[in-house]
Image 1 (cartoon, one colour):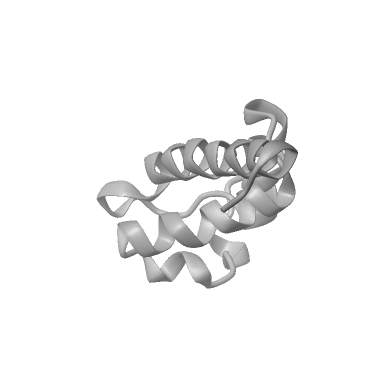
Image 2 (tube, helix red, strand yellow; image 1 turned 135 degrees about the vertical axis):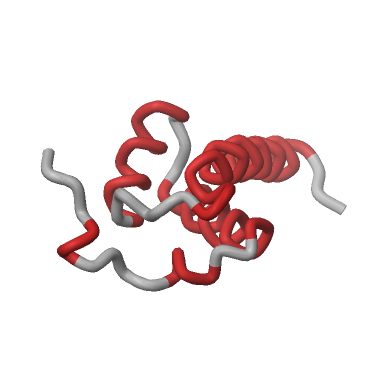
Length: 84
């Protein structure tokens, strides 16, 4: 059982993962095509959601598994990328 500061940090990290996973699910639902790379999504999530890299990485796996979108484990092919 975690106590004190360790518990506080664990709860903060869990909250970050949960918020990020919910955010990622919006991109993965309903067979939507993958338009951004994992790195690009991580940068946006870290900036907008104020989360850590490790929280994003854990949320990324959770969102893929929850959505069933195993194709999101694969890198985005250049031809699929949108022009910025």
